[in-house]
Image (cartoon, rainbow, N blue to C red):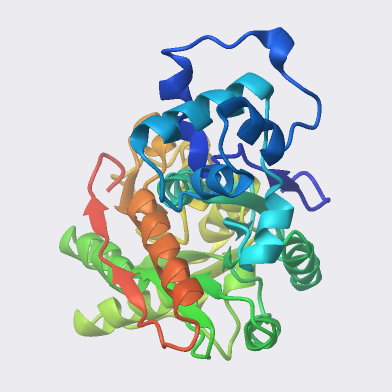
Length: 367
C-alpha cells in the first residue's frame, strides 16, 4: 500500500428519519425558517406537540398517528433540526455505527467487500467507519482504539498477522468483533470466511486435470511461515496428495503482495533448473504480475505455463489471456459479516457460530 498513514473516514449518515425526503417532496420548506442549532423544542413548538412526541418520532419509537408523524417530519426539515447522534448514543448505549478495518486498502479484493458491508449496514440504519491496518499489528491496534473512541457498536476486521491476542483482549473488554478469513475462537468474536482451502483445491485439481505436474505456489510472504502454512497452501498440498503428485518445497515461491512481487516470483521460477509447468497464485494481483513477466519473457500462457489466481477481481477479464481464478462472492461475504456482527451486538452473551461461504472456479484462457 502506498500510503503509510492509517485512514479513518466517516461514511454518509443515514439517520432513522431519512424518510424526510418523502415528506419534503410534498412540502418545500422556506429556507429562511431554518434555525441554527434547532432543538426538539423548536420542532415541538412548530407542530404544537410535546418535545417527547418529537423525540419518539426521531427515534422511530412510534406512539403517534401517521398524520402527526408527517407533520413532525415536515417541521424537522423546516427548522433544520438535526439530532445529536453522540448524545443519543450515550443514552441508548448504542451509536448505530460499526467499524471496518481492511488489511490493505488498495487490495482490489477489498472495495467490493466494503460495499457489501456498507449496503448491509445501511439496511440496518447503521453508519460505517473505515480504517486500514496495512497488515501491521500496531496500526491495527491504533485503528481499533480510534474506532472505539468514536463509540462504534462493533468492528469487522481483516486481522493483521499475530494479532489474535489483541483482538481477544478487545472483545473481552466488551467490543464485539467479527474477523474475516481468520479462525479465532473466543467469546465476543465471530468468524466469517470463504472456503479458501476448498478454493485452492479446486484450482490445483483443475491444473492437474490439464496434465500439469510441476505446479508452483506463488504466495504472499506475509501469509506463510514454516509453523503455520496458509489455507491456500493447505489446499494446494491436499490437492497434490489426492492426485498422487509429490509436493516439492522448491516450487513454493514467496514474494511481496503486489504486481511487482508477482513479476519477481515469476523470475525466480524461470531461473530454476526445472521451471514449473503451472502456477497457482495466492491472489489475482500476484497472478497478473507473474503472467506479465512470463509473457514478456517469451513464455506462452497457458501452453508453456498455465496460471490460476484467487479472488476473481475485475481485471481477470480485462487482460490477455484472460485469467482463470477462484471466485469469492465478496458482496455476500460482506453481508454475512454484518449479520454476524449484528448478532454479537444484540446478544453479546451468546456464541455466534462461524459462517463459511462456498467459492467457485472460473476457468478462462490462462489455464
